Length: 264
Ligand code: NAP
Ligand code: GCO
Image (cartoon, rainbow, N blue to C red; front, side):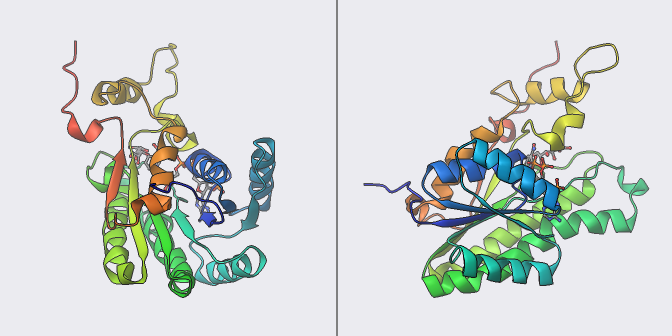
C-alpha cells in the first residue's frame, strides 16, 4: 500500500507563521507530522503558535532569520535537541521586491537573493547531515512560476527562484545516494499576503488589471489557494515519492501549459 502518512516525522517549515508555509505545516500536522516553524520576529512566532493552536495543532515555533548561518545552525541544533531529528525540510521563507530592474539597487537585488536562494542553501546545508545519519530525508524547496518565466519588475525574484530550481536538482544529485529526496514545488499565483498588492481593488472599485490577467492566463480560471498546495506537498514529503528526486512539481492550475485566453 502506498504510504502518504507523515506519522512520527519531524517537519521544519521555514517562514510558516502564515501564508503558504502555514497551510503546508498545518496539512503536514494532519498527516501525522510534528511541526517546527520559524519567523524573524517573536511576535510573529507567537501569532503563528496561536494560529496553529486554534487549528488544534501543537507546533514548535522559534525566532530565526534564515539568511543568518549562525542563527540557522543554532536553530537546527536546538530543534534536534528539543524536538528530534528533522525528517522533512520545506524551504518556504521568501520575499519579493517588485521594482523595474534598472531602478533596483544592488543591495535590494542581493536582499532577495539572500532570502530566496542563499537561505535555502544555508538551511539545507544545516539539515542534511542529520538526514544522512537518519538514513532518510525529504527536502522541498518552494520555487515559483518565475523558476521558468520572467516578467517585468521581478528580476531578482526570478533569478533567485531559477537558481533555487537548480539548487534543488543539485541537492538531489549530490545526496540521493543517502536516501534523501530533494524536490521543488512551483506554485502558480496563490492568494496570500505576498500577492495581495496584485489583487487590490482599483480606486474605482474595479479589479486590479493583474488579477484579471492571471485569471485569463490560468486554465483553472482562478487564483490558487495555499490549500491547493497541501496534497502535492504531502506527496513529496511522504514515502510515496521515494523515487521522485530533482523534480519541480508545478501546482499552477495549468498556467505553464496555456498561452492564455484571447482578450474579448
Ligand atoms: P508571505 O505571505 O510573504 O510569507 C512569507 C513568509 O516568509 C513570512 O512568514 C515571512 O516572515 C517569512 N520570511 C521572510 N523572510 C524571512 C527570513 N529572512 N527569515 C525567516 N522567515 C522569513 O509569502 P507566501 O505567499 O506565503 O510565499 C511563501 C513562499 O512561496 C515564498 O518562498 C514565495 O516566494 C513562494 N511563492 C509564493 C507564491 C504566491 O503566489 N503567493 C507563488 C509561488 C511561490 P515575516 O512576516 O516575518 O517577513
Ligand atoms: C509576481 C508574483 C509571483 C508569485 C509567484 C508565481 O509578482 O509575479 O508575486 O512571483 O508570487 O512566484 O509563481
